[in-house]
Structure formats: C-alpha cells, structure tokens
Length: 218
Image 1 (cartoon, rainbow, N blue to C red):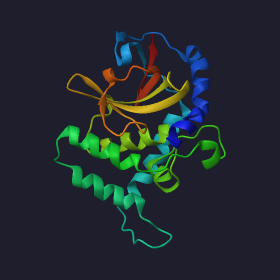
Image 2: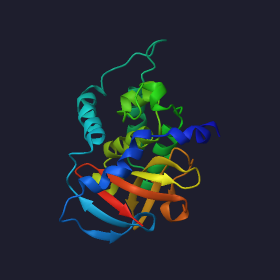
Image 3: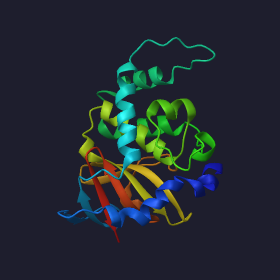
C-alpha cells in the first residue's frame, strides 16, 4: 500500500521522544506488565508532552462550534457536522460495534505526512484539522479518541500509543481501548479493530491519555 510505503516518515518528531523519555521520568510511578507484553511505568507529569496537551487545548476551543448548522457547498464539505451526525447515530449500539464504525469512518481519510501538510516535522492535529486537511498516524488516533469521548467512553480506558513498527522499522501511533480485559487496537493501517495480542511486531514506547502517561519497557 502507498500509505505503508510512506509510513517510514510517520511522526518523525516522535522519534525524538525515544531519546528524551528518560530525562522527563518522575519518581513515584507504578509498574505493571501490560500492553504488547511490556512493563508500564505511569506518571501524571505531562509538562513535556506539549503536542498532546496542545491539541487538547485547541480542541477545547473547537468543540463548542461543532454543533453549529452547516450548509454544504463546493467549498464547504461540512466534515465536522457530518462527523457529529455520524457519532449521534452510533449511540445505543454495542461497544464493539461503536469501535468498528469509528475506526472505519476515520480510516477513510487520506494519509498525508506532516512536512507536506504543515511544513513541520511533527504536528498533532485536532479532529477539525484532520478532517479538513487529513493527516498522519497520530492524527487518526486523536480523532478516534475524541470520537469515543463523545460516545461516552471513559478517557482512562483509552490511550494514544506511540510505538515502533518493527516490520517497517518506523515510529507509528495507534489508539488502544481497554474493554472486557482486552486491549483493542484502532489502527489506520488495519481495517478491523483487533486484540493487541494478535499483533507481534509493535513495540510500545509511550502511551498517553488525558492526565496521565505511561513509559513502556521490554
């Protein structure tokens, strides 16, 4: 796939995080064996994760305008209105069905590298930015995360996971959702939602949600 061939540049800036995680680690963390067989060290110190906290702050400004009426024109496709209508239709469905529909809906957007899209090595996009400009792997994961928040999923049950794709030898990002003692993966490279235990070539580096992050060790 063209998307897979281009993924070698995915989230270039996140590679830097691999070199700096040890510098921002804090004491008082807990350890547990979890995602993709890794040990996890948890912290609530998010000061060094400006891209994540920044995208949440920008989205907080976008969200109040999402339910405004939108008239479709040649220059205005009303992506946000369509997305919120789509999410509204998912309410009441079984949780696994919600995951499948959200994953499929957002995976339909084209993949585009940050240096081409924004002229930056790494940029974390809000749902509005992603839907109007498309994006790369972490942008899919962020929009899926926000979609599930709108559907009532607890934030503490979801993580944006930055990892190493050992098959392609590149950095990558996915959304992981915890449900019924499973870690389910929503990935722009995989059409279906699958159990994380079925993926053998992902090595997690760090994961993050609203208010907490985890360092993953082999």
